[in-house]
Image (tube, rainbow, N blue to C red):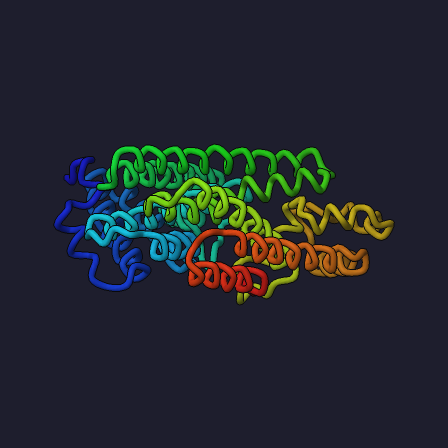
Length: 368
């Protein structure tokens, strides 16, 4: 059985992996990490091994946006060419991808989703496995939910372990751990507020914006940008500036995500275009549409688990005719403009400004 201290790589293994470009190396690192954890889990039984295999698959196939942002910033700001620092940035990027995977797994539990990216997620796989082994549907559902919660918990813990094991100076490790803890704290606050909004109904636009900032922007954009700069030893002013850039990027990303959640093509997004409307997700689209008299005709359908395609089309039509879709599209454009303005004030290499600006345009125009 692999001892707990072997969760992080040995110095020799870290050095050996740093042979290709950093983004490829992050993928190699994660492959190696999950292979070791799956082998370790096998010592605790077949079902636990399957749980780790599901966690591995949950971490594959995504955009790897957070590692890419972290590596981008570090690559432009780092002045230390030592192997240890390059190995550190790969492990740090991997930690943020594990954190993201954990949040996705937990989010699917909260949203009662059994599919992610067009295939069964951690919870869905566990449900199917339990039914195949003779469990009732209710028991299988309980097992699937528990499996997904545990998988997410394990990956959050792993992200902390990876950062604590970096070769970076102690003060930088401490700052990075504080940054990660802040991500978990704020994301939980955003998720909690998001669930409460669906229970209480009719959150204000300010409340919807706060959910986006805490649930998405904090860990998907602000923290990866700042983490890359922190590891590189960037000054406080740069860290603060990147944080402001990340806030606006994250809000734009979530606004686009909300639009895709209702108007996106399922074959592109990998998620049901009915999900957000069935869940009763309180987005800025809905917050704006509620002000229009036409909302009254569809209000009773919003949030129904048995929502049918005809009702979905009616809701979409109201979101268009009320001006909600146009308003959110303009908000996305405004957030991207704010990013571009802030980048001009940031004392960083021109190449980094251009790369982040290109990322902002990609965020605004994405279809998945």
